[in-house]
Each structure stands twice: as C-alpha cells, then as structure tokens.
Length: 314
Image (cartoon, rainbow, N blue to C red; front, side, top):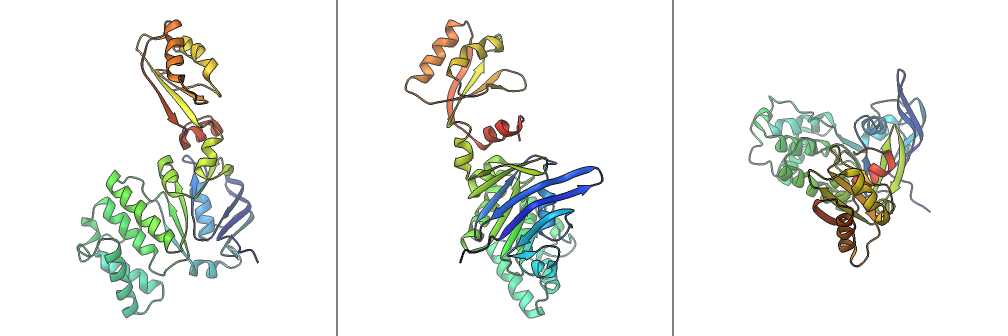
C-alpha cells in the first residue's frame, strides 16, 4: 500500500478581499523529507503555510496534513505539527527556559515533562548557557534557535518553517541549516518557505516555485536547473562598452534568452558547454569591438530558474 503524503494541497484557493493569495495551489510533500517552497514576497508562501497549519480556512480546494483535512480535522492536525513563523514568537521578558516550559505546558505536558523537554532542547540547540537569561538579551540567531526549539516541544511529525533564516547573519543561518538537516534525519517532514535561493538549493530534496499563488514548476533542484540549461556565461562589460553590440556578439553562443542586470553592465547567457567556449566568446567580443572586464562560465542556479519562469529575479 502506498503511503500517503505528509502534506498535500489540491486546487487550494484563498482570497483576501479582491486579492487572490492562492490560485489553485497543488502540492504533495513526501514524509520525512525537506521540501522547499520558493518565491518572492506576495507569491502566497506564507498563506499556504497558514492554511496547512489550520490558522486560515481556504476558500476553495482541499488541504491535508498526514491524511487529515485541515478544516474538518483541524484539532487532530494541530496535534502533529509545529510552526516557526517569520518572526520569533517569544516572551522577551521571560528566560529562554521559562519560554519553553510555558509552551510545553500549553502543549499539555505535565510540569515535570515540560521541564525535562525544555532542558533537552536547550542543550540540543546550544542554549543551555544563556537559558536563565531574559530573551530580550538574546541575539537574533539565539532567538531564532529558541523559536525553533519551541516548535519542537511536542515532537511534531511535520514542521513548517516560514522563512526561518530571514535577517540572520551567515553564521547563524548555517547553524539553522544544520539543525534542519538533523531534524530531517530524525524523520521529521519539513516544509520550508524561503526567498533565499541558495537555502532551497542546499536543504530541499524537492522544490516548488510559486508565483501569484500557484506552483509554476516543481522538481529536485538539479531537475529545475537542468531545465534552463546546465551552464551560464557571465560577461562583465567595461564601462564604455555597448550592451547591444555585446548581446549581438553573444547571440550565436546562447541557448536561451540573454539577461542583462539592472545597469546592463553584466550579461548572463545560457550556453551549452563546449571545449574552447571561453576563447571563442572572447574572440567574438573582440571582433565586435566590445571591451569586457570579466568572462566566466558557471553552473545554472535556482536564480536562473526563477528568472526563466517568472521573468524577474527572486
């Protein structure tokens, strides 16, 4: 018998007045995996998470978590999920330990069990040292780790992470990434929404690109990147170079649309890699009288995927 998905959506619709936040969202997330929901602000990522977490009722379609309908069986769904939102939901005047114990008690743990679980999580997330300090003295990274610990108090089978690393420095972000991988290794299903393309690339086994409330592409990061060409040529023009002349010179090498940056000083060109390609490109630009400062070839990224699918950068 095939195991049902951990999270599923079928033609999910959610409106806020005249604004359609979700426009027929379809999604399936396998159990025990990290799934990335990638899109810009306003794409519908947070709305989808709030529907899955039973915080919003959909206006159409159906959503399930672990086979339970998020509307008809909302109390049962809440028993099996955790949620870390975009902003830490903590009492700043309580200590880190007191926050976790309070959430444990709200999750119907006994006083003794809540204390034991709080200490387990404080140790796991490297917060045992500052556990008795008020949260208002914590750094952004410490607050984010405490918020993640709070969402795990009741040992959820499914965890929703809504842009969990927004505003964190690179070190704190790497720490959260490592914790996410550990949770997946322990069997937790994680739905991760993010605007950070490299975050989805590093963490997610599968990624759905969402725009205007609907999934416009879905697959593994490598599958999505191969769909827009395996390699990209990056050409940085000299200040006096003509972008139009450069684009004309590069067109014979392009396997797709040539994308300039905002100042049109840098061109990104999808190409099919071949021996001697860089030499050929430099010669073609030189023959066209176009001066350049740099020519490099790199592998396609999720940024290229998003640009190709939506016509704008993430």
